[in-house]
Length: 142
Image 1: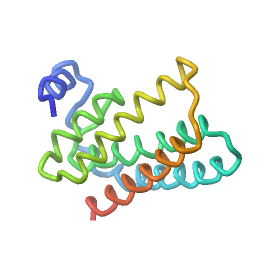
Image 2: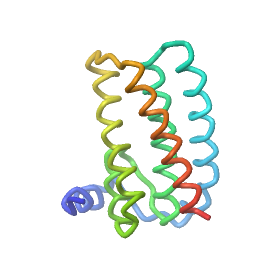
Image 3: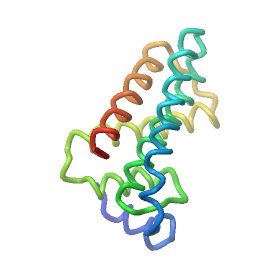
Image 4: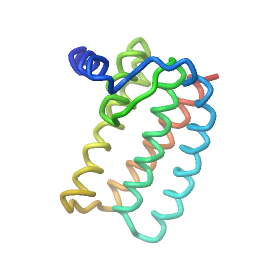
């Protein structure tokens, strides 16, 4: 984890302590589950770019649930990932998944804004990753 990224997010009010955030965890996990379910349906249609985008939304909501569980709220997808990496830095398995999730964030941006195409293998990878991050978020939150 590059601590400068975390400091940047805090110093620029892109991540803030929020006394209500812990109350939002369950809703975030429910949203993540719903988007994961949608992505599983979409991949069957061969819409691989859409699968990546919807699976990423699941990844983001799972990651945001972890952020909320520590009493923070966010104004940036990038900062959500960077802060979760910092807050959970003793959980190496979770951090590896979050790093992969951040890679998907960047890939999703290239797909959305740069016209990058996604093949079946990539879509399946993102779908599996979204499931793993969701499961890890649920387990960590227990």
